[in-house]
Amino acid sequence: MSTVDSITIEVIRHGLLAAAEEMARNLCRTAYNTVVYEIHDYGIGIHDANGDVVADAPGIAVFTRGNDHGIKKAVEFLGRDKLRPGDVILLNYPYWSSAHTLDPLVFAPVHSAGGELIGFTSCRIHVLDLKQKDAGYVLDSTDMYQEGIFFTAAKLYREGEINEDIFNVVKFNSRMPERTIGDLQAQVSACFSGVRRTQEIAAKYGADTLTEAMAAINDHGERLARIALAKLPKGTWTAYDFVDQDGVDLDRMIKMNVTVTVTDDEMIVDWTGSEKDVRGPINLPVGQTEAFCSLIFKSLTTPDTPVVAGNFRPLRVITEPGSVMHAVPPMPTFTLWTGLLGGEVVLKALAQGMPDLVPACSGGDVCSMMGLGVNPRNGEAWLEATNEAVGFGGHAGGDGADGIMHISEPGCRNNPVEVLETKSPMFIESYGYRPDTGGAGRNRGGVGVQRSYRFTAPSTGICIVYKTKTKPWSIDGGAEGDNNHIVLNPGTDREKVTGGSYNLLDTGDVLVNNTGGGGGYGNPFERSVSLVAADVRNGFVSVSAALQDYGVVVDPVTFEASRA
Image (cartoon, rainbow, N blue to C red; front, top):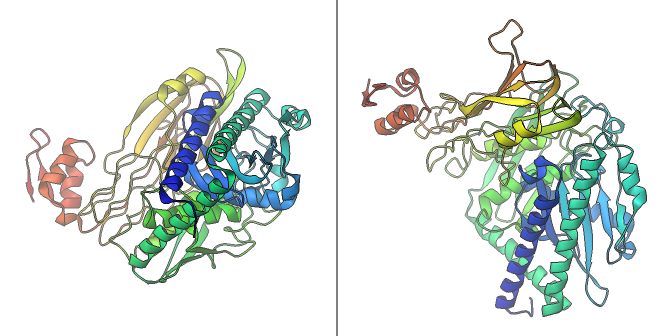
């Protein structure tokens, strides 16, 4: 039991949360990369001396939890006695860091005035280039050595002094050295600001008090999770779904198989039976598998409180080394989409035992599109990317949300049209909702979106979309949602429908990103006439679909409606 009073603990908790938010603001103000400062593709945390997170700033949810795993692996490799005040460590070895090579984890130890290690600050982002075999993104690597430079706990700063050797390695091994180094320095700045604020808290309340408060924060997080876990239905349920392909064997769908068991004491997420011998880069570092399972567990137990490591003590994740859910060297891991799709396989299993507590499947992907090439306006290399919103699944409480970021990236945004058009030779011809893509149901699935890009110079368009061959599943008699798909040059003799792909595009070529809608919840013919009429009026459901899917006749002019 903590000897620190609860008021002091709460003041310290909010001080740490404020410090984490300051780290995020610092990062966004100094990063060179729109993926960071516009999309919020980052994970920021403040951790105790064991590496367990006690405060975070929301970005990509799986990043923050994965940072715990990475810090612990790096400290184990380096040795705690090698950590000095002012050090900053770089880790992007996937099997330790919980992500691919372009998602480097930068972290710094926090020492008290007396030199005692009291915690860590961490910042993970997506950088643009670290000598991976293909510019932008790798979709077809077959081993780790094609995926870029590895840094296994290298020191970017030693006792506050820059380590030029590491930065020079990056400089001469990156296609975009200025932006990559600028982003790494932004991570360093974020970590240093977190160290400074944490040290101020330690100086004000005492290092021992801060250490006790951190332990109490995580213990409280555990208690909240266990209270919620006790209220969940108990049982064991199994489900599976597929990743479209692995980038190498294009006709082989990759099975994700999960068995979820809920007891009074824990939730066990067991991935035994998932695909093995996957040649392409969709294999997951085990830290990321643990991270996305943690996201689902938190959404069910403690969704209204900030992330702390104690929230996940009742969660146990089982994987098979060598499977798609637990990559081991030299298995390729660059395309991490299994971790984005896997969370909803857990929900699919849980829906069998607690359909009133989980939603139907969303569009199921982040539907990323990345463009790169040489910008004719300035002759410089450009690379810009954005993730697209999807429809969320209908649920017992109502309709799924229309066009919002996928559940795996709840703190993220997409890249604004104005930014993309300013920084690249891309013209956004249209952008809007996709009618009739949400699965019909008593509670409708949310609709997806469509964005059409016309390229005004020769470019490469990388589509990172891996749920196009299966449709979003529904609950309790609802209809499936429409699936994601990419269309190249629609309406021409060169039209092509695709998913994950690396596309060489000419001036004038068009790429249309169509995102999926969520699955429906409940019998569509039980949906109220007034709600169907409102859907037609708002452009989410067509007049013909209202009749066919809901049995409702809607006047296209007055929107008066009645049962057929």
